[in-house]
Structure formats: C-alpha cells, structure tokens
Amino acid sequence: MKIDLVWFDSLGAKSSCVFVETEDIKIIIDPGIAAMQPSFPASDYKKILWREQGRRKIKSFLRKADAVIISHYHFDHFLPKDVNLYRGKTLFVKNPNEYINESQRKRAVDFFSKISKDISGVELEMEKTLTRKFRDCMDDLKISKEKDFGDYKDRRRELLNEGRRWFKKLSERWNSWRYIKEMEYDEIKTVYPEEKEFKFGNTRIKFSRPLFHGVEYSRVGWVFYTVIEDANTKILHSSDLNGPIIEDYAEMIIKEDPDIIILDGPMTYMFGYLLNRTNLNRAITNAKRIVEELDFELMIYDHHLPREPRFRERTKEVWDTAKRLGKKVLTVAEYLGHLPKVLDLS
Image 1 (cartoon, rainbow, N blue to C red):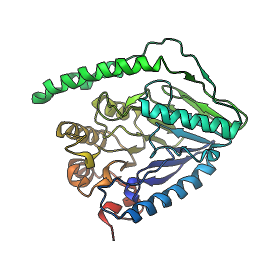
Image 2 (cartoon, one colour):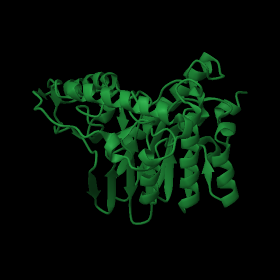
Image 3 (tube, helix red, strand yellow):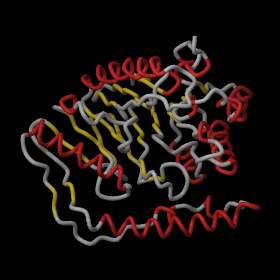
Image 4 (tube, rainbow, N blue to C red):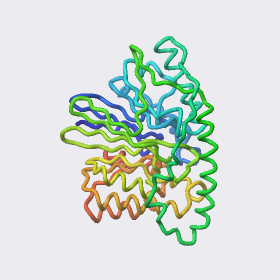
C-alpha cells in the first residue's frame, strides 16, 4: 500500500485529503479544501495562495483515482463544482437522504444534480420517500452514557434532551424529502456505503455507521470513518470526529487496530465558543487512549488542530504521551519535514 497525505490543515488550508494506492485500486478520501478562517494569523493573500496550491494538488490526485470517498458535504471534504473530475469513477458518498442536516442536504442535492446533468446528461432521479424509522445514534453509545460528568452532568442532560428533540424533528424532515437514488451510469457510479464493506481483489474498504460530527447531537451533522486494508497495511481515516470527543468512537478506532491512523483533532480554535473545557478534555483523554493502547506505525493528528497557534499547548497531553511512549504522532507538515504554517508564517 502506498499512501500520500495530499493536503491537511497544517499546510495552510483546511483539508483532510489522503490518496491510497494498493495493487487493486487507487482511492482518494475527502478531496476538498477551504481557506482558513478569519482568525488564522496569516494574510488573505497567503490563505488564498495555500488554498489554491492545495486545490491543484488535490485535483491532480483526484484525476488518478479509481474510487472517491466523500465522508460528508462540508467544502473542505469534497469539490462540488469540478464534477468532470469524477467522470469514470465510483463515488462512495455520505448518504444524502438520512443522517444529514439541512445545509449539507442542499449541498448534496446541488452536487448530485450537477453530476447527473453534466456527466450523464440526465436530470437527477428523485423518488417519493417511503416513511422510515431512524435509530437515534445516541442509542449506539454506551461508554459516553455511563461516563461521570460531575458538575457538568445537569447541563449535559439538558443538552441531550434538546438534541433528542432536534433529532426527532430532523428525522421527520428526512421522510418528507424526495429520495436521491444511487446512480449507475456508464461514466459514473455513486454508492451510499455506511455500515458496508467492499472488496477489490485483496483490498478491503470498510465504512462505519453514521457518526456524530463531533459532540453528541452535533448540529453540523454526521460523518463516517473509512478503513482500507490490503495484505500488509491497514489505514483508518477518521473524517470529522473532532478528537474524537465521544468515548465510544475512540473505542471503535482501538478495536479497528489500524497500522496508520489519520485522526482529526478537536477544534481548539473554537475553544470557549463551540468547544468547551469538558469536551476538550474528553477529546484529549480519548486521543491519549488511542496513543497508549494501539501499536501503530504512524498517527497523523492534524485536521482542525493547526488552525490556531496554541493547538499544541491545548492538546499537550497527547503529544507528551506519544513522546513518552516513543510513538510517531505528527502533523502532516511535520511528517514532510516542515513546521505547521500556523507556527511558521514567514
């Protein structure tokens, strides 16, 4: 297996793009990119420059891929406009009909409509949705339910109750939307892969069930993680689990026992706003546990983290644990022999 870390936040633009090549198939995961947020300590010129450098590199790898994996519809995880780049490929894409918030649903409809029209020359097929029941992803969690949150438990209970009500209303919306079918045309195929496995020769690709994008009932939606395995190597790409914040997701990663982990971190640049101390501590504890319990070759700890200069200080225990145990935990910039852009703006 050959792995290229195509573009990540530490290189100066938001992305979590990986290219994996085995003897059987060439796969690109989350080929998207976005410029850094206004608070990022660089000029607008540099932010745009790094975004465009990354976009060019992502496109070059996307052209070579046989299969494309899109874990969700945030713009740093897929390219919505350059649809001809997807021609001749199989797309394993987040199901746009369920476990998705309304903004990502709209992006998905626009994306699939453009693919269908520009590549296959037909209007997007959408069917009347039959009434379905959707399990609450909170019901899949055991460890986080049993965790002692101390003084935060009352506030957490309130948030979970609000989240359940939000999920109920949103799942009713899913039953009101017209259903976007999987496509299978001569020049493109789309597959909704959650909770499924696929074999290409000796290469296995496995997808998780829908997982919260960060904390329980995160309003930004759901994602899936991806595992790719051949005879020699197993890689796990976490997408946007934000740490992971949720203890059960750390347990899932540990049970997968990958050789290479692409782990996104907590959004420390949102600390005090969308990320509180309790959830930051959860993310740190979970990442430390992954470092301590897995015998990996490499853990890339990058996406979300290097968007502000204090990211190492705020996740210090993870880096210190890796150093103490002699584990290889790096940002992509460091893996390539450079400082993360947020620490080297010269």
